Image 1: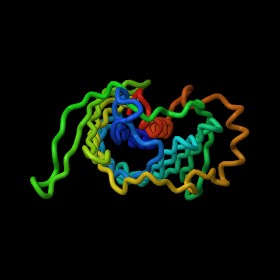
Image 2 (image 1 turned 180 degrees about the vertical axis):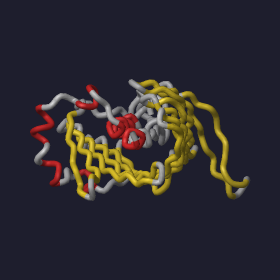
Image 3 (image 1 turned 135 degrees about the horizontal axis):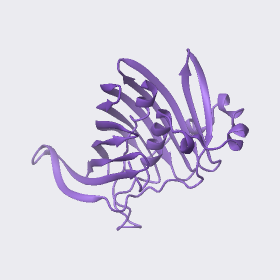
Image 4 (image 1 turned 60 degrees about the vertical axis):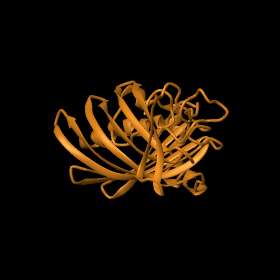
Amino acid sequence: MMLRLVGLLLLATVTLGEDPECPRCGPCVPRRWAAKEGILGGYNAKSGPGSFAGVIKFAYDEYVQKIVAFSEMYVGGKKYDAYTLFDYKRGLRYLITLHGGEKVCNVTRIPDKFPPRCLPGAKFLGHSYLGEKPMNDLETSAYQMFIKAPNAKGVATITYTKEGSIPIGEIIQGDFNGVGVMEVVGFSEVTREVNKKDFIVPKICRRQEDKAREEADPIKENPTLWDIMEMRVKKRFSNVGF
């Protein structure tokens, strides 16, 4: 059950500003960007309530059709580490976790359509500022969006800088795969550069690729908490949730 809760902890970053090529598309992320996010939240599952905290380092690159995330989460005092790579050109997802002190790779098939980077329909809430006017203030913009995806529903409020489109934070609450979740996310070290080495498929996963192509998609047939976690990394850039 604890692993199933871990998968609920990667929530969505959805805005870095509006796309000048599509002004009505709503908030958009750049075609290539990376950041770290600190997470703190709580959940209410059938086994009882609990809290979680952690850090996620992620990168998104539309040019190479890949998304990668390194997560370090603490749930109920227990640490969970994971590496997740979505390769949309190959149509494969690679997940590396620790089991009994050893790294284990799981490879599954994913749709070959790269998640869109814009969020049409996000509601603009208004402008505000952080700090003290008139010399030390930072103008911000806020959006609200409703999360509507399979096994997921809720609402997210996202804030980013008015100029420069740098993400600041988000508050998300809802029900994900039957678990009530509320979390606060803060962003740091945002950049439009990515480390290309992070997108290289680990050697431990390569021998699993052929097997993954032959198997049915386990995410659709029997979603686990890790699957939900990976889905939320993916939905971070999708117009259907997170």
